[in-house]
Length: 84
Image (cartoon, rainbow, N blue to C red):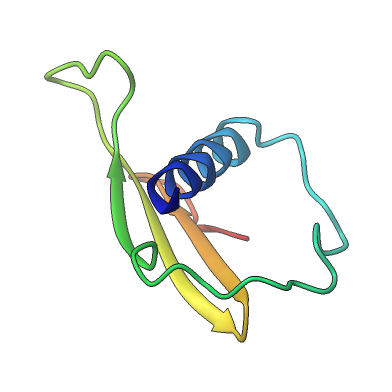
């Protein structure tokens, strides 16, 4: 079950990064009720599918922003960081 949740979060993060035209000025969940998954924070290297040998990886840095809230920074080479 935790693995399914982690997959859903990763898919959501990738979609959020690739659909850069969507921004929310308000929290998507103003009153988070679930604890953070301790396996999710860290640095995640992402390649397209299928990954190409010469493709540059994008990087997500996931951290705890505060109780029950993640912060996500999306990094691409030669681009300003995007913070969520």
